[in-house]
Amino acid sequence: MTKHMEIGISGEMLQLDSFKWIQSAANELGIAGVVFTKKDGSIRILAEGEETTLQVFADKVNKQEIFTRNAHLYANISDPENLGSFFIVTSDDV
Image (cartoon, rainbow, N blue to C red; front, side):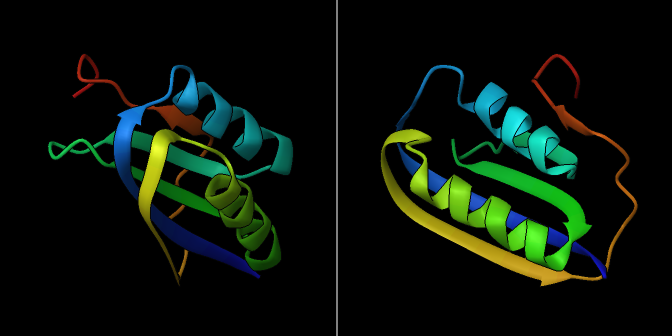
């Protein structure tokens, strides 16, 4: 069943190419969504796909060093919002 997942990550110093890694992992798993940085410097990922696939994605994100030191990660599942493909939002896109 298709579900929506929100993942939040905070830590110290964002690693180079972390967004591209997240997008690549999502694309490999057939997950739609968006990743962006919040004003506090944390990352938010909104993703949609099969619930089991979303869990695999969350596990991959949790194991990857997105920041030089990941301090906190959460993942919440809810009903889908029909996000389309997976993309990166930069400050120029807002």
